[in-house]
Image (cartoon, rainbow, N blue to C red):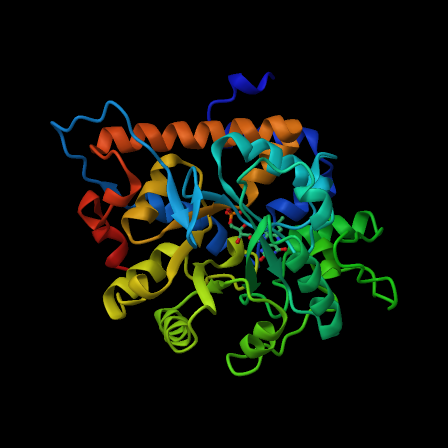
Length: 377
Ligand code: FNR
């Protein structure tokens, strides 16, 4: 069907499912164990109610904001997700093209199917990217990649260090589909298999994971990173107020180090029954709200509607990421499918802001929501 006839993200996902390979669908769709975190990531937003104000002139509303000091057109960003070319030859560069007219930030996966140089080659002026790092057991490989990203500083404005998956989650759908076709996949950006022999099997996720370090710590990893980049660090996969507090404390003690944290359970793909970002936002509000004043707090997981984005912003998030939604857009229609996905989300955000009586995202706050149903559990 023509893309303009698809009216929401579920419809785009349904079309993508008919266009991409079974293996691709299994890899993208899958999550840990019983998919409890994946499903709850989305449904938790349905338990938060909005509190619209009336008699407010909202003829126009803008989603423009800043992330780590860089101007962006929207708080909506693309989460790092591996292997976009499994869905469509446009790949990660196609995602960049698809989001370009919205001025959204794109975080590129360590396991992207195109190189960082290819992805930013035709980047729109002012487009903001971040590079996601899975630290490799062979540290020299990660150091070489950080040097490449440094050379692309005109485009890449942060290093996203993913912490929530020191080992891959148990994704049975992915594993099952790989039993049927045993060929292995490779990330363009990280030439993992070049000099080492990698075991086959175990699903795309487990194959990509091979070579990733599990020994990261507060004490060792951040000082090492600081030696190889001076871009701000974004810690991805924070799931408790304790770790959010530690990140803010580290940022205070080491100015210019951590710029943001991403509250995320990896789209439910790592530890099943880990909390959705909404719960962690509520914890931080309750136990260490000063975190919001020290570092930016970004969230991802389960975003399907503009109202989901607005609710996260009301709870204190500065930015909101979509992982699978961008991939489904790509699968449904290449870069144009990504453009349609963002067009829908941006229009829903705009409608939501106007119906709430808000003209700028900076006005959003807890007074616009009722999260009692979530706080109870
Ligand atoms: C991911 N995610 C991810 N995260 C990361 O830090 N590095 C990566 O390489 C990947 N790869 C990846 C592949 C696929 C297919 C998916 C679906 C996800 C997690 C991603 O950044 C994000 O946290 C979630 O996707 C957010 O949840 P939603 O939007 O997919 O519900």
